[in-house]
Length: 277
View 1 (cartoon, rainbow, N blue to C red):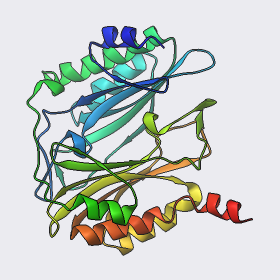
View 2 (view 1 turned 90 degrees about the vertical axis):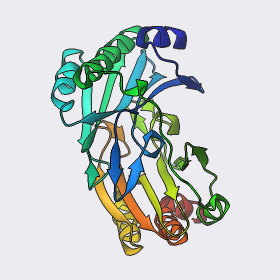
View 3 (view 1 turned 180 degrees about the horizontal axis):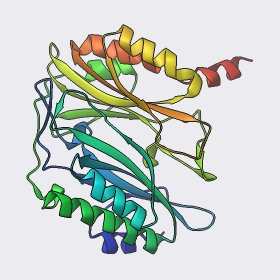
């Protein structure tokens, strides 16, 4: 793909990874709060659009962060541009103001897809009356013992503006949409974003699950005091069938991490069982 062409059409810089390309747009204008914690873009309020090559051209996938008043004009623009909507849902509860997440996709040439998603992004700017990314970026307090969290979860996160985030792939699953492999970079991942203190932490995130993993993961999270706030799909023609679960937890950081670890242990079991046979 011509990534420079994508950047020139959309007017934003992106990041390339193994032949794929993603542009992330932090929604700095949204002053979102949940249970006294400020939800800044690294905590899960960034719009992103990603491009991956296919056997016949390019595939577009994206997740658009919208206000309630953005939904109608953006839906109409997606249809006008010939793009698809594969999910509309929440990621949080008790969030003020309310925000909605809309998954979009499309197939075609790189240039055409870039032009189409640019029109959708322009419609968001028009609905808000400004460029969401133009507002000053904010940060949050993070006094967590990240090494201890790493030790419990078995992964290493990245710090951004006070948010410590884990992105965990599913190498045990070969996921395809319209016959094209969907990678961690394209949104097929489990993630957890942390802020706060050891005694009063907040964690938000998303689990990606095979159909038989949904109930065990849900039970593990709820059994450890972590709220499951949304359960849905992100794609329509994916194979195998994949579900996504959003969660929110507030409390002692070590206890929350142990709860997430219990849920993580409920994923990938099929591969382990097959290896033992």
